[in-house]
Length: 287
Image 1 (cartoon, rainbow, N blue to C red):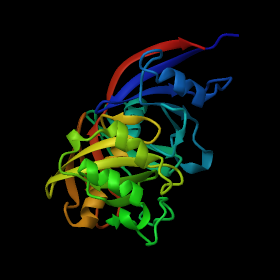
Image 2 (cartoon, one colour):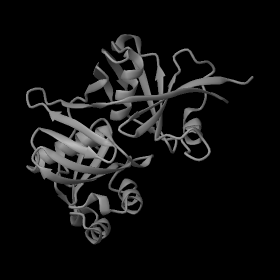
Image 3 (cartoon, rainbow, N blue to C red):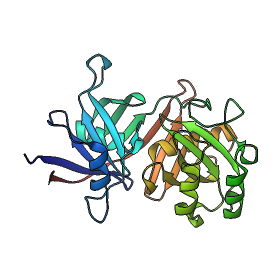
Image 4 (spheres, one colour):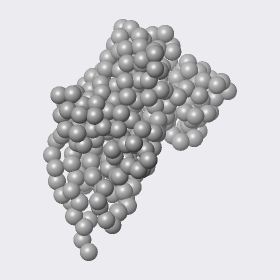
């Protein structure tokens, strides 16, 4: 029997998603397979990922559960821009929602269409990022000690061969670079993402710090490739910048798709991300 699925297209600063409310959907399709087909920008709907809404675990206190599938069909623990899109979809232009993700519960507030996400505290322990490191934290870590092959490639590309690794529920590696716009992300991104240093792969970010409250970041996302914005990556970039002593705890991160305001609250240790989300259109697709 044919199944017709309703979907909703959203984006957060150009990081675009296919949102499906599957809380009453039966039978349940193979989301990894559908993500690979639907996200194809030539033969499918076109997106960086598929966001599937499911019923939250009853005792969790969440309103909805979010599953995140990258364009290559892999499942991610969470997605910062995706959370903003889901919140806008669930509560509209104003409201608050608690979302259950693979990385835990996340509270999202929408006010006049602008969304602030409590991303929780960053994880810095190398084993929990995870990243292979001789140190407890891989902050400003020299690549010559752990990956000399990668060090040479980055130096040749004009990237500082030191990495700072942070988990925002998903793994990130941040590198300083004076001219991110000149980099061949399609070359450097996969080399870092799939390097043996990262047992579960990694989201890769190249950051140029302009002032203590402003920086520019380009991203290669695990499972999706080069994207116009990465919410969790912007959060990781600010955390790394603070620990490196080059950014204040509140900064504007300029991404190819626009700007996110990130604040690493000293009192709670939580990172807060503020930025827009936009509804593009609705549609149906026949399986």
